[in-house]
Image 1 (cartoon, rainbow, N blue to C red):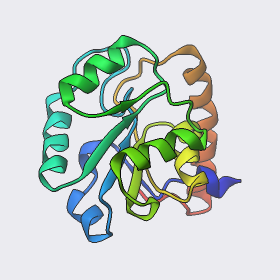
Image 2 (cartoon, rainbow, N blue to C red):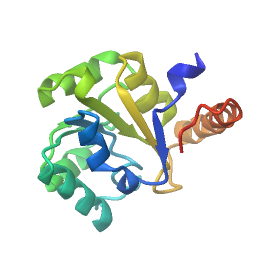
Image 3 (cartoon, helix red, strand yellow):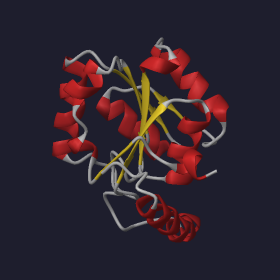
Length: 169
């Protein structure tokens, strides 16, 4: 079970994800979480450094889809501002959401990476389908109540992954 919760890579920020390395590994599609991956929770603006990273990804030919469990109009507005497709509410970690994103991006699972800040939604969902996964540190401490609870469990999982030398930071 621990392997399903183990990200392929772990970074402090999405901006640290090396796009050239992803291209070398044959990645063409990026499925990216919204809240606390691209935008701080409860905010409406994507930080400029993340906007630059997304622009560079597009320039390098990546196909990008935002996959969010969020159901508000806020998610749609942010996706429109970024000019990226959005699938929401996704129901992560259910496989259907990830399969819809892969189809929308017109890439194969082998060409796809999932990037998100939550182990029990983004990483579990991607790993269940055999997708490559990248975990990033949340960009804001602001969280929904149920996410705060899950963060405690995540810390235990991350500790176990580090103890077993499975976490590639």
